[in-house]
Image 1 (cartoon, protein in one colour):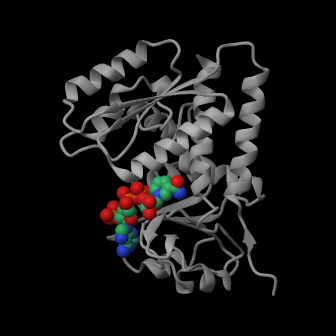
Image 2 (tube, protein in one colour):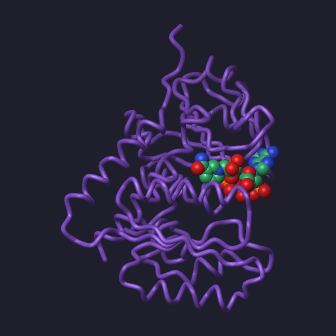
Image 3 (tube, helix red, strand yellow):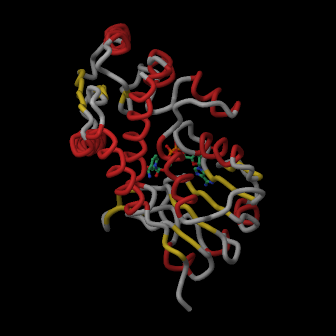
Length: 279
Ligand code: NAP
């Protein structure tokens, strides 16, 4: 037995980033600009922001990090966003999550101009995604769709189950699969007989955040399994999927690390360049 097809997000992310870098360096326009607002001192956020900064520099995108203390008022935060909305050298704006308690991510997302909303969290972009219109959409599910396309995995007419209903991954993932004509079920912690439901799926996307949650009894023979979960454990990063045992059943699978993870930043750059092309 040769094992399942390994879907390498690392490889696709590199291709996307190199292609964007070529496009930017060939352009005579000013480079794209991305503003990242960081509130407080969350250590995981610091790592992600530094990764975004490095990826921008490599692609030729000018990034600007705006650091605010966790005591910042909502009014001051919204003022900063307003100034970035009006700044013509800024194509993309995002506010790194998590935000301190008392600052609603929804209110912050709604303050960013939809055409600069490179995380795709503004209600206008959420609406456009569900309506099947053009817009800026969340980076992680965008990357997953591109990965499935890259490996020739059909979505039209398939049965897809997405486990996890966050605004960042689960819900936009379901909308994107629906746009690609999959029959989509969005599962969550109240879903009954989750293993039974998942085991009928041609495509299983897990965005739960519990290591080892997806075991072979959740997986149909030959199915494609996409593991979005990233949990820090004493042994390193762990996905939701019990990779070893599920690999014996599925037809294709994303590893952790090297699967979905690298795609998120690559598609943040893609969204920034998309906003720059339009702007
Ligand atoms: P989240 O906000 O952490 O929510 C987790 C989801 O899982 C919720 O919808 C929850 O259901 C569901 N869930 C929890 N326990 C469950 C159970 N026993 N059965 C079925 N569903 C269950 O989700 P998230 O922000 O999307 O993050 C999920 C994971 O993806 C995390 O590990 C995160 O680190 C990772 N992630 C990775 C990337 C990447 O770049 N690869 C990007 C974003 C997130 P309820 O809604 O009912 O509570």
